Length: 95
Image (tube, rainbow, N blue to C red; front, side):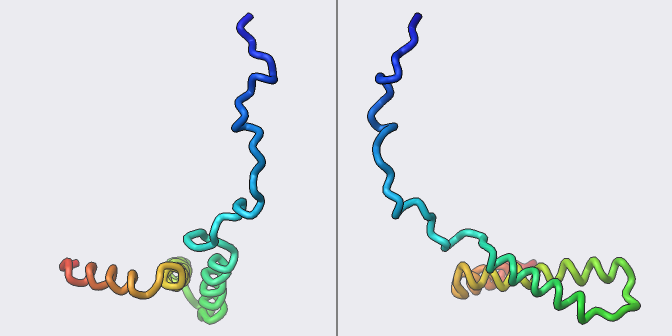
């Protein structure tokens, strides 16, 4: 009733795949070393924080240290020229 036999599968489905091209390049991907940089910034900020901080201050500290870590990862992955152009464009836009 309109069912094609298994042998009618297109030949492209059976083409061998090269295992050399299976791994995507690490450039542009967020990997474990990038996450470790951000985690290290957050843990360092938490260790250096004074004990008498309020909850609001702790949340601001964690957010800002995570932002610093993300900035470091951004500079490391995209290159400092691109980030420099982005910062200059932001500063000259009047914000």
